[in-house]
Length: 165
Image (cartoon, rainbow, N blue to C red; front, side, top):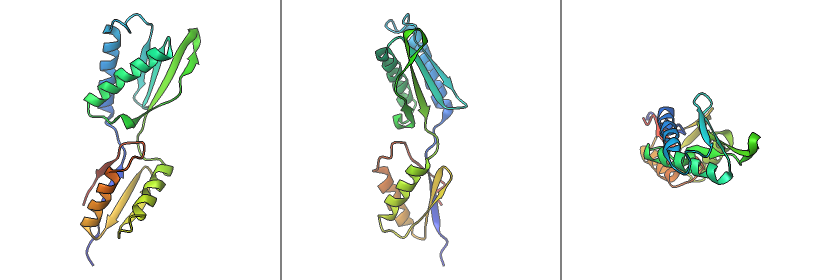
């Protein structure tokens, strides 16, 4: 029997690049004429992967989020890796918006990917391992078909394919 080939489906973000984009955003907020004296700020907790934007109005908070998104795109980070919560009222009449960096594949998304791959009717075996999926098959062509299929799907977060053997 031939040895099975496999690959992992993961959703990971390079936090160093995210931190670099955050630093550039802070610099741009302090230099842009429309944001400089607005009293707005952005903070990033690298350990939690959480952005906190504090702004005087919802419109300004969206501008800061757009600046951050543009910096992330320039650094090669997919925007789907960042999910923003709804704006909340903060003290002093300000608005707080929290953004989360998506790391790993959550269980509902993993189950949906598993179901979609099984619906392809290919001879592949999909196993869910905590925050990633492993796809294995004796046929490398079947694995390539799965990768091509998953590239065309939108699961609300970026997917990478690692450990292809």
